[in-house]
Length: 149
Image (tube, rainbow, N blue to C red):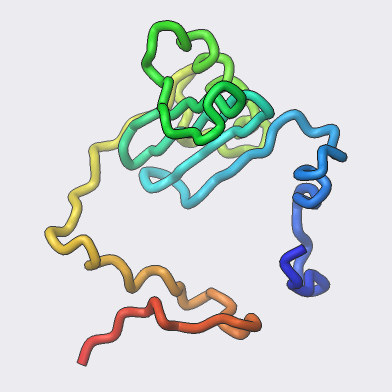
């Protein structure tokens, strides 16, 4: 779908075009960005989207059917406690099954001290293009790279 040649990689998972078309038997799609205190994890099902941001020690729960814009976070709301717990368990079970349990403490998330943020909100823009990133992709530009001079 993205037009990328995957013969050089061994992608894990499932074709997202099939997932989007409803041709998948998978009940949830999982997401992980980064690791440790900077990680963001999510489990997304037909009804609920649950996410945990380790950097903020915050949980998010969105009702994808009742509120399709996903603009209201129901995490921490009394009426959604059971849905939040169930989705947290779905995500934690997935992480444990794949050996990614370093952020889990029993049935809760491990917490870290909140990171200090720089005064300049653009101070970390230079980390967008990691040295290991494949910048030879068609259409790629380094316009987002911060340079000094």
